[in-house]
Length: 501
Ligand SMILES: [Zn+2]
Image (cartoon, rainbow, N blue to C red; front, side, top):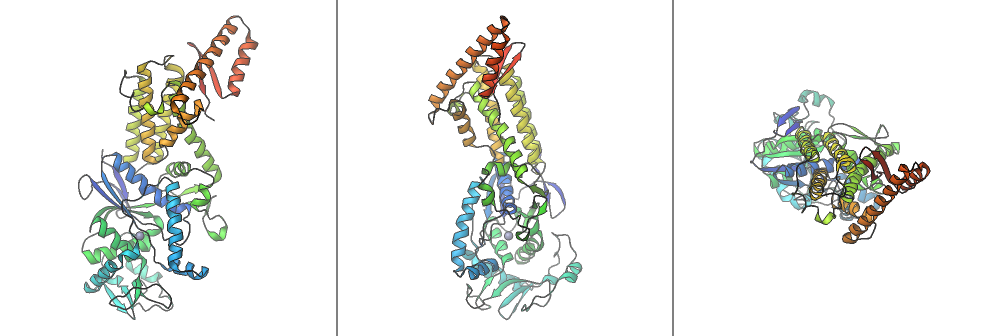
């Protein structure tokens, strides 16, 4: 089945057909580095990360480009407020951005260009737009003449006349028409500036993305992502610039993620509900924040709250506990998990693995429906729990251990596509039952002993029940329960498992 992507440009889902078979170019609008990024920005960074991971899982060779906007009005304003150089603001918040991105498990882009390193190319593109009759210079500024670009409004689905009606010329602006936007801004005293054919100045924000996307991905590339708030004017202007300079539409699939509300309200500094990713990451691991983001479709608005995050934390723990319990019960050393996977007969557990993988892919193929993908992981975790607790022979034979490791591997691999399971999930799983430190061989041995002791207690309990000494049998069950070991009586005798807390 083809991957289908909702395209903001056409307002429908389309089959994904890359420009070059087997390869995908993605451009994602990156941070303007003047402050810590907020949870809404975090969504705009996580979404392309997941799209990239899934396309790689499907065998595509993906190139992800994400810019850093290191020259912009907000940076200059913030530097003036703090009485320091714009470059100091840029350095401070580029570093913070990388730290927070890593904490969110967002892998580094393949290329991360900085706007200030591409000013020459921006000047060239602006000159091309002037040469093509689409832009004009005024007193050191250069503006895009929106009325000359026949497709203006195509992305945001607006008529140019309606846009005109709402637009105003700002104080001090020299543009001919209120809709025209700045490509180049004449330098003001004390601001960073570059020489240009129109005098010293700096590029506008929109031209930065046109230049850096087409430079690294080609005049027409596959996917452009960003928050829904960037559709107009930023991305509308990007089309006008790139198409106007290069003569072709720059992007095949425009992908926009929805807003995040906080406690049911739009996030705003004035409401006191403004949440930076850094604030949230102080309380929750990045994979829990990702789980929260993944549990909603990326185009839908979502509501952030502590309750919501706590629910996600528990849900993710259920997946991790399923993996931990299975590894423990099947006496699998996390280090050997990939090696024992292929031996053994098919079981119902293998059927569950195949079904989970099929549903995961169907969900992700359908415009990256991560919520459906997560549901398939939980179904597989349930099947794994059932197998380990009720069906697996005791002690587990080679076939059982192989089937368990295949299921664990599937949860890990699919969870990794979403960025909610990684090697650390497996490590914590391996360390948990043994609690014997970092030495996993030792942990596995200790696990073996614990299993033997629990089985001994259950054998004693069975004898007690035979002798109708129910006080003794209940005491054993209750004391085990206090230690997090749940005993279940089945037709085939007592089974036990570690409780998912
Ligand atoms: Zn951009």
